[in-house]
Every structure is written in C-alpha cells, then in structure tokens.
Length: 420
Image (cartoon, rainbow, N blue to C red; front, side):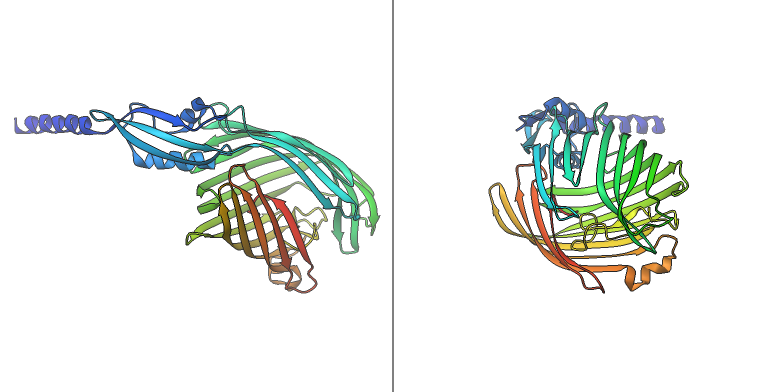
C-alpha cells in the first residue's frame, strides 16, 4: 500500500512540475525581407508548444548567424499568458546578390579578369546559386548550386559544373614544363546535417582533364598531350562550433576531406587524398580577433608531376607565388591577428598581422621531406581588410607576405573574403 501511494505521489509531482514549465506560445520572426519566414521556422529547433529552452534558442541564433542571408540575429522572450511565452527571433539580413569583378596579372604578364554573379540566399531559402567567367590566358566558366536545406531541415544537395582552362606548370627533375590545362566535369553531393554542429557531404564527380604542352622542359614523364577521364568519390565530415558577431568569430571548426580518384591512364595511377583542416578563433578584447588554421594532408605517394597538394598564394602561403611547387603530403599553419581600426555603421576596416608556414613531401619522397629546409616556406606579413557588414562575404583583403626561407619570393595578394 505504501509503495502504491508513493507511486501516485510521484506521478502527481510530475504533473505539477510539467504544469509549471514555461511553454512557447508562439515563435515570431522579425526583420526578414528576402528570407522566407517559413524557411527560418523550418530550420530552427524552438517550436510552438515546446518547453521554453534557452540552450535551444542559443543554438538557433548561432545557426541563423551562420547563414549567408543573415548578418546578425538575437532573440527576446515576452510573457503571453499563464505559463505561456512568445519568442521573438530578430534578424538583420545581409545583401546576398554579389557581383564580382577581379583584375590580376596572368603568367605571361597580360591582364586577366574574372566576372561572377552569385545569389547566396536564392529564393530566400539560403540557397547559393550563380556562376563565373574568367579569362586568364584562356577562357573558363562554371555554375554552382548549394542548397543545404532543400528537402528537409537536415537534407540538401550541391551541384557544380566547371569548365576550367588555365596555364599550369608541372615540375619534374629535368625542370618545369608549362601546359594548357583544362578540366571539364560535373559534381553532385548529398548534404546531411546530423545536428547543430555536425554535418557530412557525400558524393562524387565525373570529369575530363587535358594537358597540352606549351613551353618549358620536355620530359618522358610529361608527354606533349594527355587526355584523361576521371571519376572521384568524395566524403567530407565537418564539426562546426563557430559563433559570429559581425566581423568577429570565435570557436572551433574541423573538416575532414577524403577523396578517391580513378583514371584511365599510365601517367597517373588511381590515388587517394585525405586532408584535415582545423580552425580556431578567439576574441581578444573588444577589437581583436586571433585566427588560426592548421591543415594536414596526405595522398598516394606517386613519383609524378601530378601531385595534388600545391604551394600557392591563394591557397596556403601568402606571398609565395602562383603554384610554385607540388607535393604528396603537406603540413600548413596560418595564424593571424585581426584588429578593428574603424567600425562605423556598415563599414569596418581591420589591420592584420600574419604568419604562414608550411612544408611538403616531394612526389615519391619520404616523410622526412617535411624537415628539409628546401621544402619549407615561412612567410610573415601584414595586411588590411575593408568590410561591408551588411553584404555577405563583402571583405576585400590585401596582404603582403615576406619570405624568410632560402630562395623565397615576396608578394602582394588580393582577394575577396577573409583568407580563412
């Protein structure tokens, strides 16, 4: 009898406890113009009738601030009646239809250009859609679609078509050979979000590569013409715990990228590639941001000029030059301190002090190549950032890197968006 009374008492306590919970009466979205309210309600965790949960609301806000169409967001809670509360998600949108016009010097010292137009909030549903045209000695173009929440609040797709043609060097023991390189292919990826912090991309691509000898040192390893059909399987796992406050970022992110590439030629065997990228960001006082990126990659160690990891200005080492070397493994550290000099309304100017350092394994070489000074690049430098807070990724950057290791160059690097 006592045991039965105890059970009844516990049951009544549970009912009373539940009755005292604060309940979400209505979730209201304010500030949206282009972004669809139905899309916002689709991807957030807090729903009408659920228990009021500050942890879920914090996660919703962090997730919204990661979206291309939203520059800032915050929530407010107001009492509605009894134990019911209204939750307001206040959103500041970004302008997301971004034209791009870039001028730069090509390898033959002629002026090259790139024109692009992307909408990063296409249809108001956080879909990235657009394309580019580039003339850099040869003409290239591409079309891209990225829709992470196309089907549900967890499932989406990415589709890419590229027709890239450029002048590219291949490095052999005999010297450097310059080729007209073309890559035409289509890629399809399935995007799945496990939860707020974890997601994967899985899929593959079919593409054709052509190498046509232009000038330089001829070699049996690099024939005058190659026509390669290739297939690639890709799996990317990302852990993302970054929090954004306009130009400031804090937290960590890790991305593991695994690829298997098959081809039908004797000059490049089937190979695998694994690359891990770890990012760490920390706010420093009110105006500072310390940013760090560590990349570790390893691939099949074929003694071939087609090694997958490049040493390049726009990829890993600022000031080093455009594709000056290749390797079958890499270790790269980028660290920089960003300090806000001007923050007036929509405009921000940041200074930047950085150190880029990396080392590579030679094709067919040993892991001991990492410790060979010839394969090491160390570049400290300074830069500036000009930022529009209300336009997505509207960061114009200029950096000057100075090489410390033997035989290195110095150079200025321009770009759109933070370097990492």
